Amino acid sequence: MNKKLAVVALGGNALLRGNEKGTIEEQNRNSEETLVNLIYLIKEGYNLVISHGNGPQVGNILMRNDAGFEKYDIAPMPLDICVADSQGGIAYMIERTLKNILKQHGIEKNVISIITQVVVDKNDTAFQNPTKRVGKIYTKAQADELAQGKGWIFKQNTKDSDGWRRVVPSPKPIEIMNQKIIENLVREGNIVIASGGGGIPVYYDQNGMIQPLEAVIDKDSASSLLASNIKADEFYILTDVPFVYADYNKPTQRILEFLDAADTKKYLAEGTFGEGNMSPKIIAALNFVENGGGKSVITEAKKLEDRSVGTRITLNY
Amino acid sequence: MNKKLAVVALGGNALLRGNEKGTIEEQNRNSEETLVNLIYLIKEGYNLVISHGNGPQVGNILMRNDAGFEKYDIAPMPLDICVADSQGGIAYMIERTLKNILKQHGIEKNVISIITQVVVDKNDTAFQNPTKRVGKIYTKAQADELAQGKGWIFKQNTKDSDGWRRVVPSPKPIEIMNQKIIENLVREGNIVIASGGGGIPVYYDQNGMIQPLEAVIDKDSASSLLASNIKADEFYILTDVPFVYADYNKPTQRILEFLDAADTKKYLAEGTFGEGNMSPKIIAALNFVENGGGKSVITEAKKLEDRSVGTRITLNY
Image 1 (cartoon, chains in turn purple, green):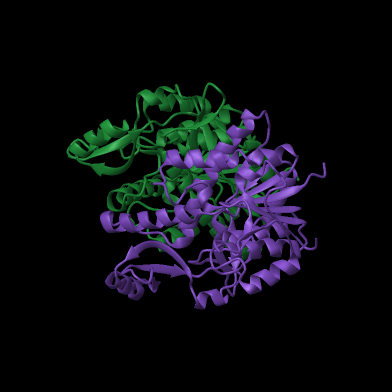
Image 2 (cartoon, rainbow over the protein chains, first blue to last red; image 1 turned 90 degrees about the horizontal axis):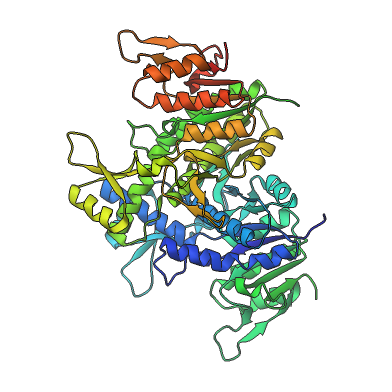
């Protein structure tokens, strides 16, 4: 019964894609297309924790909050509640879809979705430098008013735009609540969905009370911490490319199939992975193997069938 | 270690009250005022499952859905996703608040929130007669358009109003998903939050696949089923009155302190509990004791301190 334990982090767009409207029909189809690939791991006997992003979903929830307040004067909810809402909706969709896929494959397994708070340090330097853009695009005048009224911080959306967007801090996760429960459930053979959207950001105040925070934790970073803490053997980050590339979109672009920790750090320092959103994934993958994990894999969901595809990061070759 | 197991169902307005705006500050305060009373049960050694309503919250989520679609063309989510969202947000608020209350009382206990699907019969007669009003008030013209476009059903809001509201079926719950996991977790001494808002309504299609439904399951009915299935000893329905009354608001009004199953059924048949929302609670309480539960209690949260307050329903005197 000493099965391998893997944490699989699904990108936010595994369910809701940027080039789509995000209707429920699209989300259901995307979920199924992504999740069916987990069967390869399950059939090999892995125990699985599934985490997921929530970027497009929580963005929509924030926009609806604004619209509901403006149109019907419905009290808007703070970001921590919006993240919790998105955990509920997304986990349900994953749970239902995956249960059906399991049934189609004749596999009997529970799928359990746990709402997850993630503790950060209130003095994390990220709070001095909020970087994560969330919610709707405002005019300068609206942004100034909200900045004054609510203390929100805004950044110009792009260089050539008049739009302003709220930015929130993205602090480092330091504790996954209920991680022991998650570990117990998964080691008993259940599939557990947890730490969605990077987790609901909270901190401990001077009295040890849990307090909410308006922040967005990087989901790969939170998933990496969870994977380390529950002593997972492998950590999968599923994204929209089959491999990590060096010099992506340059003439020197090349596939990176195997990386050890030393090379990974060297490439990170040299900027080999580019400016995009690949670096945080690689750091999360690296942290996992440096904290005792066996192997991190960055690839596309549909490449899980062929286990020789994907960028595999290990401590040493 | 043979502790008593209780299921406690919180009313939707335990957290968000009808006479308030529903700001996060109000919801936090209400949550704390309600949940602090659970300490009396916890200190007596009860293991607890907490369920909760979601009426005001899911109503707000639906209204925001409408506003977000009208204002920003954001794809609206179906009712099952809205219920799942509300489970996430509400469970998080309960979990965080209760963890803090436990800490203040020096009690070490995990609090775990499980997203819960609840299976109903797609041929439930409730689907022929939708009764539960949800979401915003529309004009007749808007309602007609939505009825045609989406197949929604509308009823006039009140006799003397031009408003029309969508009505959805309220089918009987027949299976609580993951109930064995919930039972195991609570019998290990963890507090479990589950089956929020009556659960996310789903059914099994002819191939055994889980399919979503646009419905709202009565939360007391779902909580009663959960309590029976996990063999709880006691079932508490917390509402806004200390007792159930016979002939409520009539000159003959009187407190009902103890009820056996036979009297409860007689009073239900005679309409003694009135037309309001007390009857579904009493039916849920009755079902629990008829299905083997020891005792159902209907009372206010703040009356839990004095365990001789509240209407107590047992199979026999």
